[in-house]
Amino acid sequence: MESAFDDEIGELLFQIHRLYHIRMSALVKALEISPRQIPILKHLYRSGVANQRQLAEKACVSPTAITLMLRKMEAKGLVEKKTDPADRRFFSVSLTEKGKSVVEQLKRLRKSIDGITVIGFTQEEQAHLQSLLRTVRQNLLEQISANA
Image (cartoon, rainbow, N blue to C red):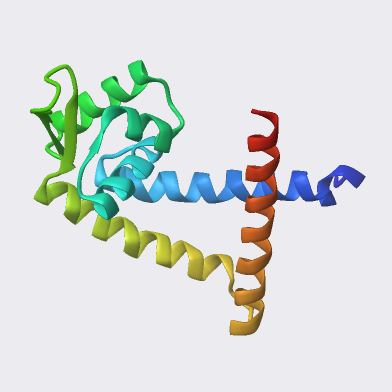
């Protein structure tokens, strides 16, 4: 039974996020990656190379967690780490060819899920939804920055 809370914006966003995450998790299982690795893969795909601190920030995890995540990704052949010649205490991280291939597959999966998400929407409605969601994201980012 639905309650009055089910139609509140925050609850709707939470439910949509959860459903999207469940669907994406099921699809990425075949790629042998976890949903938590996706932001790392996408960032490396776009930037080419990053250090562990940058990746921890992008994935919203601690330095310890990123170290463990990168170790697993390196073992699967998705990323490679190289010692930073400027400071040997740090590593630069980049995608391998296998990692790049996984990101290409992720892009296709995301496009598929996005298509399902907006079934029945016109192109104009899709564009409007994207605009509204960008505004929501920006509002929240500004609030977080103001309170930091």
